[in-house]
Image (cartoon, rainbow, N blue to C red; front, top):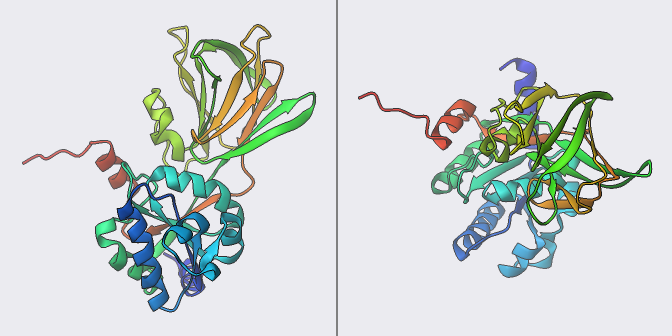
Length: 305
C-alpha cells in the first residue's frame, strides 16, 4: 500500500468517533450480540448509535437511538449484525451518506459480512484500534420507472434489479436498449440486471456469470427464456439500460431491487437502469481475500491429500 493510501486509512481509522450498530435480529442470540457490542464500544470511549427498533428492544437510553437517516448523518462507521440481507437493506440507505459499513455474519452465506461472530471482538479491535482494514467501493444501480416522460418511482439496488410479472409467473415480451441503441428482444419470465456484487446472488442461480467486484460491468441475465439461443450479456458499467414492453403483456409488472423493494408498473411504462451516482463503501479486514471467500462459499475448495 502506498504512503498516500496509508495516510488516508490512518485518518479514517482515527475519525471513528461515532459508530452505529444496525441490523434486524432474527433471534435472541443476535439481539444479545447487539447489546454486548454496544457496551463493548462504550467501554472503549466511542459514541454509539443503535437502530431505533433494536435499541428499544434492548432498552437503551433514548440518546443512543437513531433512524438510519440520522445514523448516516452522524456516524463515521456502521456495523451490520446479521446476514447479507441485513447488509443489503442498510447499504441501500446508508451508502448515500458515504460512511463505510462492515458486517458481522449472523446469516447463511455471508458474502458481504466479513467478520466471524466467534472472533468479532478481536477482529473489531484490530480494525478500530490498530487500523488493520481497507475500504472497498462497490457500485450500485439506480432503477427508475418512467411514465408519460416522468419518473414516477425509483430505487437503489446493491445486488440486482429484476423485472418480472407481479403475481403469477408467466412470460413477458420486452425490448432492451443499451445507450439508446436497440440490443435485443426477449420472451421470458423476466430479466435480472446485476452488479458485480450481485453476480454471486440471484443472478448466479439463473446461470449468470460471476463478475469480480472491481469490474466496471453489468450483467443482463434472462430468466427462463423461450429460446435456446438466449444467453447472459455483460455490458459496460456506465451503460444506460432501457426496457420497453409489448402492449399485450399483463397489466401487473414489477421491478424488484435486491428482493426487498418492489416497484409496480404497467406495459406502457419504460424501465431505466444505470449506475448510481455514489458507491457503497465496504470496510474489510486486512486479511480479506475475495477469491478465498468465493471458493469457500461456493464449495470450490478441494483437499488433495
